[in-house]
Amino acid sequence: MNLQNILTQNKNGILLITINRPDKLNALNRVTIQEIGMAIQGGEDDPGIKAIILTGAGPKAFAAGADISEFLNLSVPEGKAMAAAGHEVFNAVEHCRKPVIAAVNGFALGGGCELAMAC
Image (cartoon, rainbow, N blue to C red; front, side, top):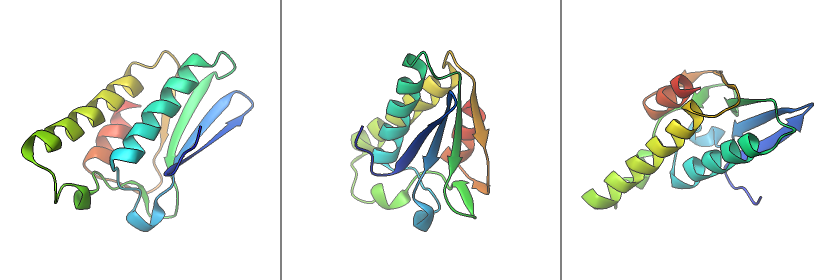
């Protein structure tokens, strides 16, 4: 899997997913949301994975919510579609058949708080 904004690591059957945008306080943009969804699905489908831990890179934030800079050029329907995609991923986290643990290591604001609560 070619990933831009998250890191994944399998350690003894525990899938560690790290949101890797510390310069943006791990804000959730389209690519990041999509990659989290793919990683959660991959962990759920892999029989060797027993649990998933989700965290943020850097010392300041788990996830600082939506990346507002992406909203500037969106139409209303595009904004609604982006929000729906985020909620779809949060639902996938919440309903994952394997335990998903949020290792909250700093700010968890807006959508970042929603993501942590879904775990």
